[in-house]
Length: 398
Image (cartoon, rainbow, N blue to C red; front, side, top):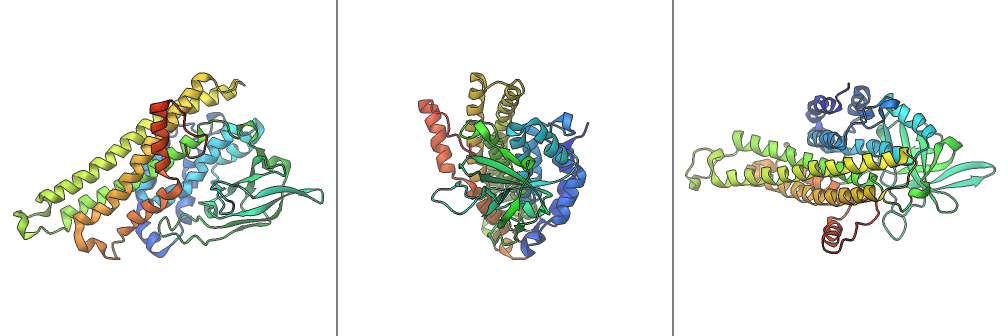
């Protein structure tokens, strides 16, 4: 049996070795994604009967904590691949699952072009499928296309002529598909989150996967996605902790007024390192707790689907609890990653601000990655659930 968590731990030092340089010089990690593809890690959540590992959500969290610590850019670049698997397992016809999840099980990397900048509200989709001269074509563009430059297969979120949601599966060499390397965010610089354009791409029927009745229906995929995001932020925090401990042991000089001869005996250094550890470990514990709830919800919902049933009352309860648990974890992971990345400088002092060490990448990565969705609404959702019994919104952010 393949140990996918161990694969991630084996890859981690290879990924971590060049992380700072890739960030500083904006070198996209194509070689790293080739190693990920050849390792078989991408098959981790594919069903066993299709050649994958069908690992637990707890193992997924472990993988992304590990990769996030090594390089959160690589972890985020792989995020769409794992979510594609969940969405295909949830909504795709068995034939489409065999076709696309089978390819993933054989080693291809997938990614997603979803978010757009157009529209009044976040999440609006204007990329669309149209019928032109007897052909079905895809038109539009995406602004955030994380990981698409590294992928062999790209899943595009679009709407049909009636405004109904669907996914379109595109091989990377599709005619009319344009991938731009123009992402210029201050952090997560090497996630390849640039613009993707679709110029009258001619589609076959098998490339279109309708979302069907799942539109507006509660499911586990949003919680699974938020679990991965939270795990990446924990990974950033753990990398900060390692750097803080190393620097305090090997480079920080004590203040004369401290009354100690080593920085590692300075009470304020000890306090700061202890605070970093407590905040990060607390967030990690909440992520691992949430993973157990997401696992229960995912298994229950996938079982309902396999049996041809609508979501049961019990499954609905599990879905709500998983979303609330992940919201708690996401709040903690977000706040701890940003906070400890700043506290690193209280351990290392002015020397740690030198460009050559590039320690600011931790804060830039945390601050950039955690802008995906507002934790303020998560606080609200948790409070509304606990006080009024109201379930969280049906959205990809829960």
